[in-house]
Image (cartoon, rainbow, N blue to C red):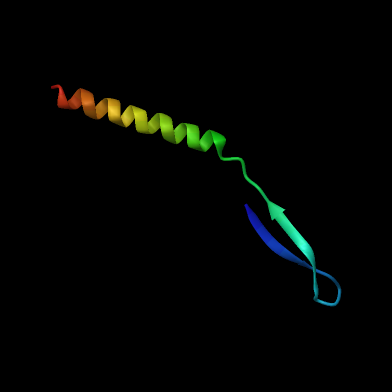
Length: 47
């Protein structure tokens, strides 16, 4: 999450703007890659 101040015409803080990014798919992909790396390393150790 990110937030930034929102200023009015007198350059005073009047509020804030927030943005949120869903990283669910990124985390899932990272976990799949981790499992594949472990599997590959295990296979190579058995050779």
